[in-house]
Image (cartoon, rainbow, N blue to C red; front, side, top):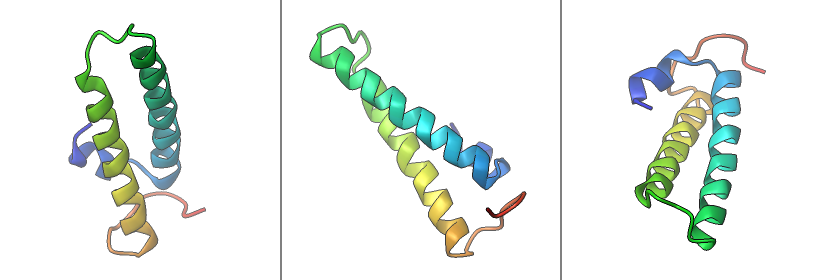
Amino acid sequence: MKTVQLNELNKLELESKLSENLEALQNLRFQQALQQLEDGTMISKTKREIAQIKTVLNEIKLEIRKHKGIEK
């Protein structure tokens, strides 16, 4: 997901996207352990997206970044 797309999401959408990605990362790691993972780059791509989402959420928390929607 591009950073521009992350800027368009509100805090609740970002948090739900984060939980989805964390769950997907866990599933990818299980697939890797069972040697069923076809694309090994998916783990690093998912980790990068998780880091981007966490960065945006932290910037919203620190009021560095403007956000849309309800705060809580």
